[in-house]
Length: 446
Image (tube, rainbow, N blue to C red):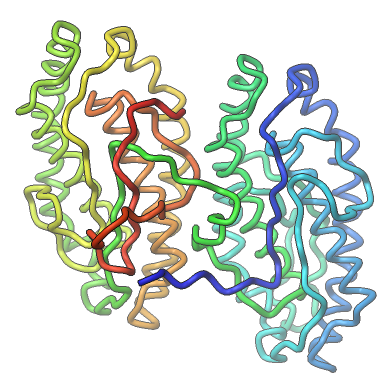
């Protein structure tokens, strides 16, 4: 059975980038972007004022006027161009008018009718999306402060002092790492580029919703990135086979219920520390990790993923304590031990530093997913599919990073926040709704 494709959103990222980068312009990228940063701030102030007029129009007519809509849409598109250029997701110097055609671009539908009630409380409703957008660090955020919802007395939601590009969050961490990689290779790593593009895409959705370009709430589902991102084969693969139902009582006490797992995870971590050292020495001598140590470390990585999925409401049921494969709805498939390069084994900790930096940023995203998912599940009794899938993608990267550090594989973790690869030919090995990544290839893909 084919997996249903995601519904087309009113604000969509379009990718037309070849990953090639000019080292000279990359080296001075921040300086070259200064004129754009000034202009995006000035245009952002005007867009905030126009958005207040759009808010009034939606309250009165239920629809934004086309001319004002296009003005704010141009700003949103331009801010995305600047974010793509600044965060090294695109190479050409962007224009100052926000016209379509940039390698990292937006398609924005014409104005449609919107609910007056959701328009009235738009700023309040947009807060969760803005928090997640700020954590992803993809671009648009409001500076200054506002007195509350656009529906509050005085209607001072447009009192934001402007908008700019966020220099914090996951996109900034990815751009920082990509800067070094590009200077060395003259080419952007695709995983980092796709991660930045995903952050830009979500930030554009959040900005469009906040500025009343659309009444559709932003979605963080990584399936939106599948049109232009890829999931290469990797020895550590995520399988999502978990329904979205969440019993409110277990959600309410989720952290307390996880305390036994925290204790066991701490005790297991002590043993893993010595096992990893033993695996390192053994792999230096033989070129591979002994099967028993590989199995022990793989079970720990799988178990820690189960625990994090439970704590962050990404998974539903209470996990077991053994890290057994196939025992949890958010699970890992870890390939058997293979021969590894002794040079990569010798310098494994140094090589892992970039992945650990990015993993730290993605862990912040997973934490926000857990907080927002906790509230959503308490209210609805279900987990948001977009949040669940984004959280699973973050856990996948974390598991691949741990597997690299613990010598379970010498394949580097892949940063793109996508879950689904091509299903294998023949009978299905997983339910149709599960996310499956195919088995690892012979060659390395960074």
